[in-house]
Amino acid sequence: MFTRARRSFLTGAAALIATAATAMTLNASHAQEPVTLVIANSQWVDALRGKNLWNAVQQYQKVAPNVTLVQEAIPSAEFADKITTEMAAGQGPDIAMMQDGLFYTAADAGFLVDISKAVEGVENLNATNDHGVVNGKRLGIAWQRAVYALIYNKPLVDKAGAKVPTNVDELIASSQAVHQATGAIGFISRHQVSDLTGFFMDFQNWAYGYGVNWVDSDGKLTIDTPEAVAAVTAFKKMYDARIIPVGDDFPTQRTRFKEAQVSFGIDNSGGTLNIASGAALAPGDLAAAPLPFQHPGAHQQIFLGVSTHSKHQEAAIDFLAWLVGPEGQAALREASGPDALATDVPVTEAFQAANPWAETFAELAKDSRSTLIPGYEVQTTQIMRVVMEAVERVLVADDDPQAALTRAQRKIDAKRF
Image 1 (cartoon, rainbow, N blue to C red):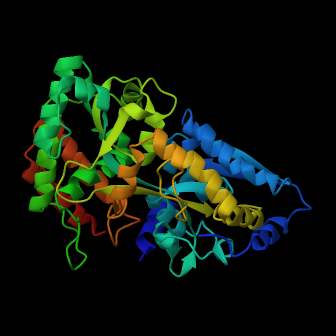
Image 2 (image 1 turned 180 degrees about the vertical axis):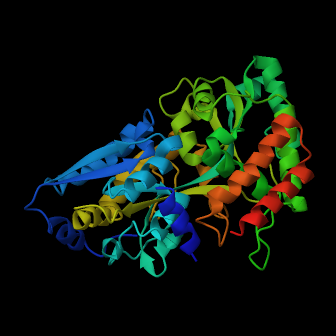
Protein backbone atom coordinates (compact mmCIF):
# COMPACT_ATOMS: atom_id res chain seq x y z
CA MET A 1 0.00 0.00 0.00
CA PHE A 2 2.83 2.41 0.87
CA THR A 3 5.73 1.09 -1.26
CA ARG A 4 5.67 3.87 -3.83
CA ALA A 5 5.44 6.55 -1.16
CA ARG A 6 8.40 5.03 0.72
CA ARG A 7 10.65 5.37 -2.32
CA SER A 8 9.48 8.95 -2.82
CA PHE A 9 9.98 9.86 0.81
CA LEU A 10 13.50 8.40 1.12
CA THR A 11 14.65 9.81 -2.16
CA GLY A 12 13.40 13.25 -1.17
CA ALA A 13 15.15 13.02 2.23
CA ALA A 14 12.37 13.75 2.72
CA ALA A 15 -10.28 6.45 28.24
CA LEU A 16 -8.47 5.92 31.49
CA ILE A 17 -5.43 3.78 32.37
CA ALA A 18 -6.81 0.65 34.03
CA THR A 19 -5.35 1.75 37.37
CA ALA A 20 -3.12 4.54 38.55
CA ALA A 21 -0.64 1.85 39.54
CA THR A 22 -0.26 0.80 35.91
CA ALA A 23 0.72 4.29 34.89
CA MET A 24 3.06 4.63 37.86
CA THR A 25 4.73 1.34 36.96
CA LEU A 26 5.34 2.55 33.41
CA ASN A 27 6.63 5.90 34.59
CA ALA A 28 8.84 4.34 37.22
CA SER A 29 10.48 1.87 34.86
CA HIS A 30 13.31 4.27 34.12
CA ALA A 31 13.11 6.31 37.30
CA GLN A 32 16.78 5.77 38.20
CA GLU A 33 18.30 7.28 35.08
CA PRO A 34 18.12 10.90 33.92
CA VAL A 35 16.47 11.19 30.52
CA THR A 36 15.93 14.07 28.13
CA LEU A 37 13.04 13.76 25.69
CA VAL A 38 12.83 16.17 22.75
CA ILE A 39 9.24 16.80 21.62
CA ALA A 40 8.62 18.44 18.25
CA ASN A 41 5.43 20.39 17.63
CA SER A 42 4.52 23.37 15.47
CA GLN A 43 2.10 24.53 18.18
CA TRP A 44 4.93 25.42 20.53
CA VAL A 45 5.38 28.64 18.53
CA ASP A 46 1.75 29.75 19.07
CA ALA A 47 1.86 32.81 21.30
CA LEU A 48 -0.42 31.77 24.16
CA ARG A 49 -1.74 28.34 23.25
CA GLY A 50 1.80 27.01 22.79
CA LYS A 51 2.74 28.07 26.30
CA ASN A 52 -0.40 26.50 27.76
CA LEU A 53 0.13 23.21 25.91
CA TRP A 54 3.76 23.09 27.01
CA ASN A 55 2.80 23.73 30.62
CA ALA A 56 0.32 20.85 30.33
CA VAL A 57 2.90 18.29 29.22
CA GLN A 58 5.41 19.63 31.72
CA GLN A 59 3.16 18.29 34.46
CA TYR A 60 4.60 14.89 33.61
CA GLN A 61 7.74 15.85 35.48
CA LYS A 62 5.78 15.70 38.73
CA VAL A 63 5.50 11.92 38.35
CA ALA A 64 8.77 11.42 36.46
CA PRO A 65 11.26 13.92 37.93
CA ASN A 66 14.14 12.13 36.18
CA VAL A 67 12.73 13.14 32.79
CA THR A 68 13.50 16.52 31.27
CA LEU A 69 11.21 17.56 28.42
CA VAL A 70 12.69 19.82 25.74
CA GLN A 71 10.84 21.58 22.93
CA GLU A 72 11.65 21.42 19.26
CA ALA A 73 9.50 24.32 18.06
CA ILE A 74 9.06 24.43 14.27
CA PRO A 75 6.65 26.76 12.42
CA SER A 76 3.83 24.82 10.77
CA ALA A 77 4.84 25.83 7.23
CA GLU A 78 8.29 24.27 7.77
CA PHE A 79 7.36 21.37 10.04
CA ALA A 80 6.86 18.51 7.58
CA ASP A 81 10.01 19.26 5.55
CA LYS A 82 12.18 19.65 8.63
CA ILE A 83 10.92 16.50 10.36
CA THR A 84 11.20 14.34 7.25
CA THR A 85 14.72 15.63 6.58
CA GLU A 86 15.81 14.98 10.16
CA MET A 87 14.32 11.49 10.28
CA ALA A 88 15.80 10.54 6.92
CA ALA A 89 19.19 11.58 8.31
CA GLY A 90 18.73 9.43 11.43
CA GLN A 91 18.21 12.50 13.61
CA GLY A 92 15.29 14.49 14.95
CA PRO A 93 13.12 14.48 18.07
CA ASP A 94 12.21 11.57 20.30
CA ILE A 95 8.50 12.37 19.94
CA ALA A 96 6.76 14.31 17.18
CA MET A 97 3.24 15.75 17.01
CA MET A 98 2.42 15.22 13.34
CA GLN A 99 -0.47 16.08 11.08
CA ASP A 100 -1.88 12.80 9.80
CA GLY A 101 -0.38 13.21 6.33
CA LEU A 102 3.12 13.48 7.78
CA PHE A 103 2.34 10.69 10.23
CA TYR A 104 1.42 8.26 7.43
CA THR A 105 4.53 9.21 5.48
CA ALA A 106 6.83 8.68 8.47
CA ALA A 107 5.07 5.41 9.29
CA ASP A 108 5.45 4.16 5.72
CA ALA A 109 9.17 5.01 5.74
CA GLY A 110 9.68 2.92 8.89
CA PHE A 111 10.55 5.88 11.09
CA LEU A 112 8.04 5.22 13.89
CA VAL A 113 8.10 2.52 16.57
CA ASP A 114 5.26 0.41 17.91
CA ILE A 115 3.81 2.20 20.92
CA SER A 116 1.14 -0.33 21.86
CA LYS A 117 2.50 -0.50 25.41
CA ALA A 118 1.42 3.07 25.97
CA VAL A 119 -2.27 2.17 25.66
CA GLU A 120 -2.26 -1.18 27.46
CA GLY A 121 -5.22 -1.16 29.85
CA VAL A 122 -6.68 2.03 28.40
CA GLU A 123 -10.30 1.21 27.71
CA ASN A 124 -11.63 4.59 26.68
CA LEU A 125 -9.55 5.52 23.64
CA ASN A 126 -11.95 7.13 21.19
CA ALA A 127 -12.20 7.07 17.40
CA THR A 128 -9.58 9.80 16.98
CA ASN A 129 -6.99 7.05 17.59
CA ASP A 130 -8.27 4.61 14.99
CA HIS A 131 -5.96 5.62 12.17
CA GLY A 132 -2.95 5.52 14.47
CA VAL A 133 -2.79 1.79 13.72
CA VAL A 134 -0.87 1.14 10.50
CA ASN A 135 -0.46 -2.36 9.10
CA GLY A 136 -1.57 -3.86 12.39
CA LYS A 137 0.81 -1.85 14.59
CA ARG A 138 -0.06 1.11 16.78
CA LEU A 139 2.36 3.78 15.64
CA GLY A 140 0.35 6.82 16.71
CA ILE A 141 -1.82 8.12 19.52
CA ALA A 142 -4.17 11.06 19.04
CA TRP A 143 -2.85 14.38 20.28
CA GLN A 144 -5.73 16.54 19.05
CA ARG A 145 -8.44 16.58 16.40
CA ALA A 146 -9.49 20.03 15.25
CA VAL A 147 -12.76 20.33 13.32
CA TYR A 148 -13.69 23.34 11.16
CA ALA A 149 -16.56 25.78 11.65
CA LEU A 150 -17.66 29.21 10.44
CA ILE A 151 -16.46 31.72 13.02
CA TYR A 152 -17.48 35.35 13.32
CA ASN A 153 -17.14 38.51 15.37
CA LYS A 154 -20.59 38.82 16.90
CA PRO A 155 -20.45 42.54 17.83
CA LEU A 156 -19.40 43.48 14.28
CA VAL A 157 -22.07 41.29 12.69
CA ASP A 158 -24.72 42.66 15.04
CA LYS A 159 -23.64 46.26 14.43
CA ALA A 160 -24.03 45.77 10.68
CA GLY A 161 -27.38 44.05 11.09
CA ALA A 162 -25.97 41.17 9.04
CA LYS A 163 -27.16 37.59 9.24
CA VAL A 164 -25.08 34.54 10.06
CA PRO A 165 -24.72 32.94 6.62
CA THR A 166 -25.93 29.48 5.72
CA ASN A 167 -24.67 29.46 2.11
CA VAL A 168 -21.96 31.11 0.04
CA ASP A 169 -24.15 33.89 -1.34
CA GLU A 170 -25.14 34.86 2.20
CA LEU A 171 -21.50 34.65 3.28
CA ILE A 172 -20.53 37.15 0.62
CA ALA A 173 -23.50 39.45 1.36
CA SER A 174 -22.94 39.45 5.11
CA SER A 175 -19.18 39.96 4.75
CA GLN A 176 -19.77 42.92 2.48
CA ALA A 177 -22.40 44.35 4.83
CA VAL A 178 -20.05 44.24 7.81
CA HIS A 179 -17.24 45.82 5.82
CA GLN A 180 -19.49 48.63 4.63
CA ALA A 181 -20.82 49.28 8.13
CA THR A 182 -17.62 48.94 10.14
CA GLY A 183 -14.64 48.90 7.78
CA ALA A 184 -13.69 45.43 9.02
CA ILE A 185 -12.29 42.74 6.73
CA GLY A 186 -15.15 40.65 5.44
CA PHE A 187 -13.70 37.14 5.41
CA ILE A 188 -10.35 35.45 5.98
CA SER A 189 -9.15 32.50 3.93
CA ARG A 190 -5.99 30.83 2.73
CA HIS A 191 -5.75 31.27 -1.02
CA GLN A 192 -2.14 30.65 -2.08
CA VAL A 193 -0.26 27.49 -3.10
CA SER A 194 2.80 28.89 -1.31
CA ASP A 195 0.99 27.71 1.85
CA LEU A 196 0.11 24.37 0.25
CA THR A 197 -0.66 22.20 3.27
CA GLY A 198 -2.86 24.74 5.01
CA PHE A 199 -4.48 25.76 1.72
CA PHE A 200 -5.51 22.27 0.68
CA MET A 201 -6.70 21.28 4.16
CA ASP A 202 -8.83 24.41 4.44
CA PHE A 203 -10.15 23.97 0.90
CA GLN A 204 -11.34 20.46 1.72
CA ASN A 205 -14.22 22.11 3.58
CA TRP A 206 -15.40 23.66 0.32
CA ALA A 207 -14.85 20.40 -1.55
CA TYR A 208 -16.59 18.21 1.02
CA GLY A 209 -19.27 20.83 1.46
CA TYR A 210 -20.21 20.42 -2.19
CA GLY A 211 -20.15 16.62 -2.02
CA VAL A 212 -16.63 15.91 -3.33
CA ASN A 213 -14.97 12.59 -2.43
CA TRP A 214 -11.90 12.72 -4.76
CA VAL A 215 -12.28 8.95 -5.32
CA ASP A 216 -15.05 6.85 -6.85
CA SER A 217 -16.51 3.59 -5.53
CA ASP A 218 -13.62 1.66 -7.12
CA GLY A 219 -10.99 3.81 -5.42
CA LYS A 220 -10.05 5.66 -8.63
CA LEU A 221 -9.03 9.28 -8.23
CA THR A 222 -11.77 11.57 -9.56
CA ILE A 223 -10.74 15.21 -9.72
CA ASP A 224 -12.90 16.84 -12.40
CA THR A 225 -16.34 15.82 -11.11
CA PRO A 226 -19.34 18.17 -11.23
CA GLU A 227 -19.14 18.46 -7.46
CA ALA A 228 -15.51 19.56 -7.59
CA VAL A 229 -16.27 22.08 -10.33
CA ALA A 230 -19.08 23.47 -8.18
CA ALA A 231 -16.77 23.78 -5.17
CA VAL A 232 -14.06 25.60 -7.13
CA THR A 233 -16.67 27.86 -8.75
CA ALA A 234 -18.04 28.81 -5.33
CA PHE A 235 -14.55 29.50 -3.97
CA LYS A 236 -13.79 31.65 -6.99
CA LYS A 237 -17.03 33.56 -6.44
CA MET A 238 -15.98 34.30 -2.86
CA TYR A 239 -12.49 35.34 -4.02
CA ASP A 240 -13.86 37.66 -6.71
CA ALA A 241 -16.20 39.34 -4.22
CA ARG A 242 -13.12 41.08 -2.74
CA ILE A 243 -14.05 40.16 0.80
CA ILE A 244 -10.68 38.57 1.66
CA PRO A 245 -7.31 40.35 2.08
CA VAL A 246 -5.65 38.95 -1.05
CA GLY A 247 -1.93 38.42 -0.60
CA ASP A 248 -1.91 38.26 3.19
CA ASP A 249 -0.65 35.02 4.70
CA PHE A 250 -2.96 33.27 7.12
CA PRO A 251 -1.05 34.06 10.35
CA THR A 252 -1.49 37.74 9.49
CA GLN A 253 -5.19 37.22 8.81
CA ARG A 254 -5.66 35.40 12.12
CA THR A 255 -3.87 38.21 13.93
CA ARG A 256 -6.32 40.70 12.46
CA PHE A 257 -9.20 38.52 13.65
CA LYS A 258 -7.64 38.56 17.13
CA GLU A 259 -7.53 42.34 16.90
CA ALA A 260 -11.30 42.49 16.18
CA GLN A 261 -10.74 43.62 12.58
CA VAL A 262 -12.44 40.67 10.82
CA SER A 263 -16.09 39.67 10.55
CA PHE A 264 -16.06 36.04 9.28
CA GLY A 265 -13.70 33.14 8.66
CA ILE A 266 -13.59 29.37 8.30
CA ASP A 267 -11.10 27.96 10.78
CA ASN A 268 -10.46 24.88 12.86
CA SER A 269 -10.99 24.65 16.60
CA GLY A 270 -7.28 24.96 17.38
CA GLY A 271 -6.90 28.08 15.26
CA THR A 272 -10.05 29.52 16.78
CA LEU A 273 -8.72 28.95 20.28
CA ASN A 274 -5.58 30.80 19.23
CA ILE A 275 -7.69 33.70 17.96
CA ALA A 276 -9.72 33.79 21.17
CA SER A 277 -6.72 33.64 23.50
CA GLY A 278 -5.12 36.80 24.82
CA ALA A 279 -6.55 39.09 22.18
CA ALA A 280 -8.43 42.34 21.79
CA LEU A 281 -11.37 40.20 20.73
CA ALA A 282 -13.04 38.99 23.91
CA PRO A 283 -13.77 35.23 23.93
CA GLY A 284 -17.46 35.97 24.45
CA ASP A 285 -17.48 38.13 21.30
CA LEU A 286 -16.32 35.24 19.17
CA ALA A 287 -19.11 33.00 17.86
CA ALA A 288 -19.26 29.87 15.73
CA ALA A 289 -21.82 28.38 13.36
CA PRO A 290 -22.04 25.41 10.98
CA LEU A 291 -20.19 25.75 7.70
CA PRO A 292 -22.21 27.47 4.94
CA PHE A 293 -22.36 24.31 2.85
CA GLN A 294 -24.84 21.50 2.34
CA HIS A 295 -22.53 18.67 3.46
CA PRO A 296 -20.23 18.22 6.50
CA GLY A 297 -16.71 19.60 6.45
CA ALA A 298 -13.26 18.49 7.48
CA HIS A 299 -11.07 18.06 10.50
CA GLN A 300 -7.34 18.11 11.05
CA GLN A 301 -5.87 15.17 12.98
CA ILE A 302 -2.59 15.29 14.87
CA PHE A 303 -0.85 12.13 16.08
CA LEU A 304 2.01 11.58 18.50
CA GLY A 305 4.68 9.18 17.34
CA VAL A 306 8.00 7.96 18.72
CA SER A 307 10.98 8.00 16.37
CA THR A 308 12.95 4.86 15.60
CA HIS A 309 16.02 7.08 15.97
CA SER A 310 15.21 7.99 19.58
CA LYS A 311 17.73 6.70 22.11
CA HIS A 312 15.01 6.79 24.77
CA GLN A 313 12.12 4.93 23.18
CA GLU A 314 10.93 3.26 26.39
CA ALA A 315 10.96 6.54 28.28
CA ALA A 316 9.03 8.17 25.42
CA ILE A 317 6.41 5.41 25.56
CA ASP A 318 6.13 5.88 29.33
CA PHE A 319 5.40 9.55 28.71
CA LEU A 320 2.68 8.68 26.21
CA ALA A 321 1.14 6.26 28.71
CA TRP A 322 0.86 9.11 31.18
CA LEU A 323 -0.53 11.44 28.52
CA VAL A 324 -3.46 9.15 27.65
CA GLY A 325 -4.15 8.54 31.32
CA PRO A 326 -6.44 10.65 33.51
CA GLU A 327 -3.83 13.14 34.68
CA GLY A 328 -2.37 13.74 31.25
CA GLN A 329 -5.73 14.06 29.53
CA ALA A 330 -7.03 16.45 32.19
CA ALA A 331 -3.92 18.61 31.86
CA LEU A 332 -4.17 18.62 28.08
CA ARG A 333 -7.89 19.39 28.14
CA GLU A 334 -7.30 22.63 30.05
CA ALA A 335 -4.94 23.80 27.30
CA SER A 336 -6.72 22.35 24.25
CA GLY A 337 -10.06 24.11 24.45
CA PRO A 338 -12.62 22.38 22.22
CA ASP A 339 -10.23 20.07 20.34
CA ALA A 340 -11.12 16.38 20.55
CA LEU A 341 -8.51 14.43 22.53
CA ALA A 342 -7.47 10.78 22.67
CA THR A 343 -10.17 10.07 25.26
CA ASP A 344 -13.54 11.69 25.74
CA VAL A 345 -12.49 13.97 28.56
CA PRO A 346 -15.11 16.73 28.50
CA VAL A 347 -14.52 20.41 28.01
CA THR A 348 -14.60 22.05 31.42
CA GLU A 349 -17.66 24.01 32.47
CA ALA A 350 -15.49 27.06 33.06
CA PHE A 351 -14.11 26.96 29.53
CA GLN A 352 -17.53 26.43 28.01
CA ALA A 353 -18.95 29.36 29.96
CA ALA A 354 -16.12 31.66 28.85
CA ASN A 355 -16.10 30.35 25.27
CA PRO A 356 -19.66 29.59 24.15
CA TRP A 357 -18.41 29.00 20.61
CA ALA A 358 -16.81 25.70 21.71
CA GLU A 359 -20.10 23.77 21.68
CA THR A 360 -20.55 24.26 17.93
CA PHE A 361 -17.17 22.67 17.23
CA ALA A 362 -18.00 19.67 19.40
CA GLU A 363 -21.23 19.15 17.46
CA LEU A 364 -19.58 19.47 14.03
CA ALA A 365 -16.88 16.94 14.99
CA LYS A 366 -19.48 14.16 15.02
CA ASP A 367 -19.55 13.82 11.22
CA SER A 368 -16.46 15.67 9.98
CA ARG A 369 -14.02 14.01 7.60
CA SER A 370 -10.25 13.69 7.39
CA THR A 371 -8.47 16.05 5.03
CA LEU A 372 -6.69 13.00 3.58
CA ILE A 373 -7.97 11.15 0.51
CA PRO A 374 -9.11 7.61 1.45
CA GLY A 375 -6.71 5.03 0.07
CA TYR A 376 -4.19 7.74 -0.85
CA GLU A 377 -3.26 9.02 2.61
CA VAL A 378 0.48 9.13 1.95
CA GLN A 379 0.05 10.65 -1.51
CA THR A 380 -2.64 13.20 -0.57
CA THR A 381 -0.27 16.19 -0.46
CA GLN A 382 1.16 15.36 -3.89
CA ILE A 383 -2.32 14.90 -5.35
CA MET A 384 -3.68 18.04 -3.76
CA ARG A 385 -0.73 20.09 -4.97
CA VAL A 386 -1.92 19.47 -8.52
CA VAL A 387 -5.51 20.29 -7.53
CA MET A 388 -4.62 23.46 -5.65
CA GLU A 389 -2.38 24.70 -8.46
CA ALA A 390 -5.45 24.38 -10.67
CA VAL A 391 -7.55 26.24 -8.11
CA GLU A 392 -4.99 29.03 -7.89
CA ARG A 393 -5.04 29.44 -11.67
CA VAL A 394 -8.80 29.79 -11.51
CA LEU A 395 -8.45 32.46 -8.82
CA VAL A 396 -5.68 34.61 -10.26
CA ALA A 397 -5.84 33.91 -14.01
CA ASP A 398 -9.60 33.46 -14.42
CA ASP A 399 -9.09 29.94 -15.75
CA ASP A 400 -12.30 28.02 -16.30
CA PRO A 401 -12.94 25.68 -13.30
CA GLN A 402 -13.95 22.73 -15.49
CA ALA A 403 -10.98 23.13 -17.81
CA ALA A 404 -8.55 23.59 -14.93
CA LEU A 405 -9.76 20.49 -13.12
CA THR A 406 -9.77 18.44 -16.31
CA ARG A 407 -6.10 19.28 -16.84
CA ALA A 408 -5.45 18.41 -13.20
CA GLN A 409 -7.17 15.05 -13.73
CA ARG A 410 -4.90 14.31 -16.69
CA LYS A 411 -1.76 15.21 -14.73
CA ILE A 412 -2.81 13.02 -11.81
CA ASP A 413 -3.73 10.12 -14.11
CA ALA A 414 -0.31 10.41 -15.75
CA LYS A 415 1.45 10.20 -12.40
CA ARG A 416 -0.28 6.86 -11.68
CA PHE A 417 -0.56 7.29 -7.92
